[in-house]
Image 1 (cartoon, rainbow, N blue to C red):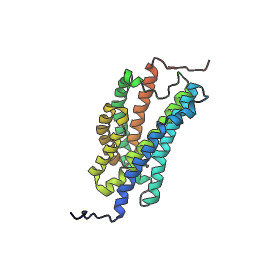
Image 2 (cartoon, rainbow, N blue to C red):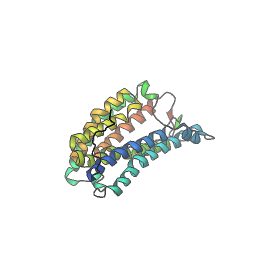
Image 3 (tube, helix red, strand yellow):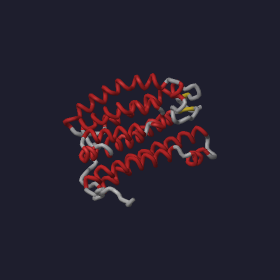
Image 4 (tube, rainbow, N blue to C red):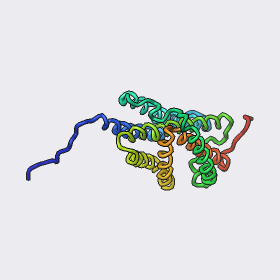
Length: 251
């Protein structure tokens, strides 16, 4: 039997880069972030010779800041270099006066919906196993501030990746619905380590956030709603966790 292959057109077009680069960058840098954040070797470096509470704060803040860099900063910088026709505004990092009211209304509306859901879900024992992520036994005002800042930085990078870098160029290259399908698939897949509930829940949430991002032309709805959910979950878990408590002033 003669060895044969089918003809495959491997020619490279500019529009191929418009879709290829954001997808590959999203995959690569999320993987870099995830395995760095989960690294026991890195965690060990923070906890060796350190007070447990201080080490926990420093380690978790490092993972949040690292996520901001690897998902929010580095992929966007690479795209700005290799896809020069796109600016930060084209990736949704902008304010559009004509859609500002739309952004405010949907941000408030979704927040009113998701905050109570996050609150009641955060009290469940299975949630308290992992949240709050900082496992310091005693929390202070500084701990609360660092936690809030860490989540905001991380989620800005996260949403700028998924609702900015990975969405707008693919809409131009593939069309709206194929771009949304790719976005939801990758977005849902990133939740697999967190369990079936969050993985499935990411599908409708991802769809809604993509549609609202495209309608507003900015990432702000997705970012602000996600922050509201994260802060509610974190501080509710802090309130109800039996082994962690808040101390207003150091004794």
